[in-house]
Structures are given as structure tokens and as C-alpha cells.
Image (cartoon, rainbow, N blue to C red; front, side):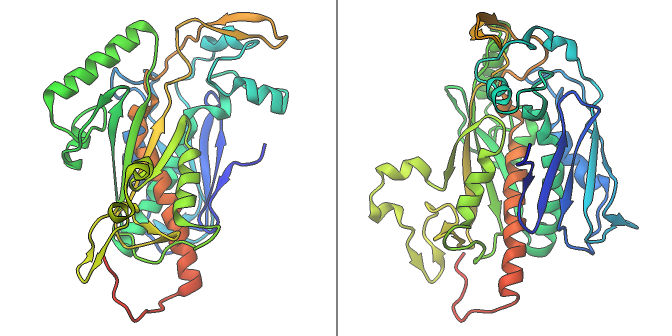
Length: 364
């Protein structure tokens, strides 16, 4: 199996399976000289880890990260950084009934036909469990970008199924289990009730997540095939269960007129940000804004029609511990992927342009 690495100059390769002994990643290309320890990474993993509320999988994983290489006396050396996370609460027996069958909506069918073998325990490599090391790598990228450019990342849930979640402030995101940027008690209670009903019904729902990068300098990205927004879309589609990506106004731009969509310029800066912080594949210096659509969890208790390996019709019911909405824990994952794209482009820009100064002022 190829396709386990992401990035050019800041490259991340993940390894492991959902029910294997451990998962992790190797980061190749992290610049030397940055102070780094597990304490810089663990808070991001704690945001994503399972078992944090009754609305997500109750698999109990501490997700404690270990740095195995690439750091000497607390400082990055420029050599590969290996991150390891032990799996501690696997229940492989929960998947005994699907060894010979395929779960609708999951990767079981395609993995079997492509490789002739698959790991049915939690989906193996196709499990969202593998987003944990990605979040760990994203924490390293976030720290470097913050120290070098002052770049900060923010994310929140904007829709849970058919429930719209209006944005109030990112300050509210850490005060509720949904990563909602809202302090509306009635809204949060409605979301809680919706998830409780789904869990009782053995069903699932999708979500929309917004993520923002602030403090991105102007000039990152290439104008043709390595466009910044193209790489962002590629990265976001690499997240489990993501079925749609918007940059800036996204699909809303279909209904906008050119006089409305094109962000006007003044001596003080851009008037709007329909472009999502990217023009011609290159960052504008504005916030980079991204939205992703996450499909309903495929592993559900509701019996569904399927087939077995011989093509015989069967009914499939998935047991075990699953998120009724995988979007609830997706915010730190989306932030991490955006950080990985931006650090890669920051390093490519530095390699290509160095400290070149242009004669026109940056507009923010």
C-alpha cells in the first residue's frame, strides 16, 4: 500500500492500524532549532481523543504521545521526528460478525477488491483512529508557524445534521463537547438531544466544520499546479469521511455576482474575503478560511443490506463503540491538516524566495 505520506518539504508518513499495538507518524523536514517536547503536542491530541463525552465513541484511549527521535536536549535537530501513540483499549471481538461481509458506506468493499485482504478490526488503516498521529504532526507544524509567523488556527462546528450552529466567538469552542462557537444554551441542549436520539436509534449524522488560519503572510503557494487552495482541498479530502470542501465563499459563490464576489481593494486592505485568503493559488495575507462536509458515520447498529465475499446477500449490523457523528471530533483534525499544508508552503516559499522584498505594501 502506497499513499501513506503527505507533504513535500514537511512530509508526514503515518503508520499503524485501529486495533494494532500502536499508531504513529514520522515527520521528515521539520526545521532544526525549535524547542519541542511531548507537552507541546499532547494538548492537541487531548482535544481529539475518544471518550471525552457521551456523544463520541467510548473507546478509552489516553493517546499519550512519545517522541522517539528528531529531538535532542529538547530541541529539534532537523532529522526525522517519530511520534508514537499506544493503542490501549481495542475490542477486536466487536468486529467478528463482519469478517466475511462489507459495511455499507465503509472502505471494506474497496480495500478487499484492491488488496485481496483487509483488516476488519475497526477498519484497520481506513479508521479515523489514524487521524491521531496527524493531529500530533499538526501540533508540531502549528508551533513552528506560530513562532516564525504568528500564524494561529481556529476551528468550530457550524452544522450538526440539519441543525445550523451560528458563529458567535471562537472563545466558546472549548466550553462545549461539540466545538460549537456558540454559548446559546438552548441550541446546545437541542444538539445534545439530537445526539442522544441518534445513539438510541443506532444511527448517525454528518456535520460541517469551519477552520481558519490567521496570520498567514502574503505570497505562499504556486500559481499553477501547486496552488495553495488546491493543496488545502487535497488535504481536507484526505480526512476520513470528508465528502466536500469549500474555500472562502465556496458554493455560495455560484449565486454571487462578480461585483459582489470579487474582493475589492483599498489602501487599508481588502474589503471582503470571498476568496478565502487565496487568489491565483497564492495567499493574500488575509485569513485562510475552509469549510468541510463530513458524512454520517458508516459503522452503525441499524441493520443494512450488503453482500459477503461470495456476493451473497446479507444483513449487516455493526457492533462496537462508534461516534454517532464523527464530525464532533473533526475540528482539531481539520486544523492540523491546514497547518500541515501551510508549513509545507511556508518552507517552499522560503526555499524559492528567501527574504525577497517587493515594492508594494502587503494588504491585510
